Amino acid sequence: MRKPLIMTPGPTYVHEDVRRSLSAEITNPDIDMDFFDFYKETCEQLQRLLNTRKDVLILNGEGILGLEAACASLIESGDKVLCLDNGIFGNGFGDFAKMYGGEVDYFKSDYQKGINIGELERYLENNHDYKIATVVHCETPSGITNPVKEICPVLKKYGIITVVDSVSAIGGEELQPDQWGMDIVLGGSQKCLSAPPGITFLSISAAAWEKILARKTPIIGYYGNLSLWKDWYQKKWFPYTQPISDLYGFRVAVERAIDKDMIARHARIAAAVRKSLVDAGLTLYPLDSWSNTVTAVNIPESMDFEIIYETMLKDYQVMIAGSFGFLENKVIRIGHMGENCYEEKIYLTLKALDHTFRGMKIELEEELHKLFIAYV
Ligand SMILES: *Cc1c(COP(=O)(O)O)cnc(C)c1O
Image 1 (cartoon, rainbow, N blue to C red):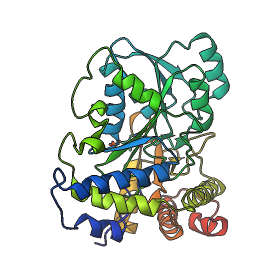
Image 2 (cartoon, rainbow, N blue to C red; image 1 turned 180 degrees about the horizontal axis):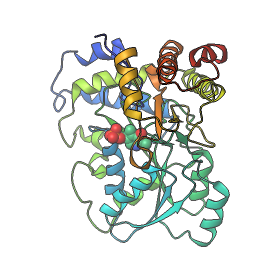
Image 3 (cartoon, rainbow, N blue to C red; image 1 turned 180 degrees about the vertical axis):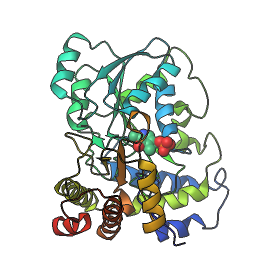
Image 4 (cartoon, protein in one colour; image 1 turned 60 degrees about the vertical axis):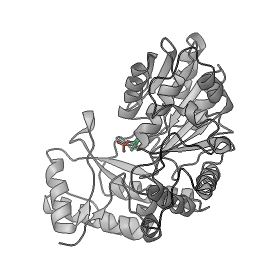
């Protein structure tokens, strides 16, 4: 069988140049001084990608490690934490905050829409005694991109430290952490950056460093302890041996993503995907704030995700994703992130979806892939 086209919302395609660099000859990353410079320059490239002058750290684990490290390092027992919750990841962030002793309140917002700024402003007027707030930039399971540009300044007004999970948005959505008052922004390697899974990175503001370094109680744990990294370059010391091959690959992926057309390409392709699905008579799960990196389309009544998935994979060699939690068997997700976000890949995906639906006697008003070509 041909290798399937993998169009899930991460992991995404790894470019040939990245794959080749993963096999480059290694050195001893704890001793070789050149490696410290390589790591530092990779952080500087990430600053360029993120449009930030803040410190950037790279950690060796998937996006969840970045999220957990931010919680572990910032949150002390009894700290009040506000978790913005309009989806599965937003809600789950609260579990991490509680694990490290946070006293969590949830600001709940409609799960089919972006966070409601007006309601958030009104809520904060009477409730702003929070040290930290957690925000999810793109809710990957439901395909919603939250308006972080408006959310973070509102929280900042009350001196609340913001931690933003931008794992599935970085590289595919506009991001200005410094202008928008984002204290910690974290990402992962396997979404829009299109490197293999296994690396996470965080940008950290002066206010976040201050909170981390001025704690009354020690940070629980070692791997998620960001304070250990404070002067890693001056000390020429890493808390543990770096996965040098992963970093070689990651560096090339970051440089590929520093492309001035990247955000516009995601916006253009995502808009064409949405319009094609809707004009063919399907409906999208989000009612507003549609993500430019992943589209969640409702599964038509009486259809089963497993059958759609199997047919697309076996008959058309395209792998798409379902979702999880309350969205299991409710939506199909098409990832259009990084290396997956090109016309030809989306064309094949929509053609496979079109043929699969027709084979199941689902009426479509027009052919999905032809609409896409007309709109893109
Ligand atoms: C993918 C993703 C993560 C990382 O999750 P993994 O299960 O490690 O892939 C974190 N947050 C968001 C919003 C994500 O999309």
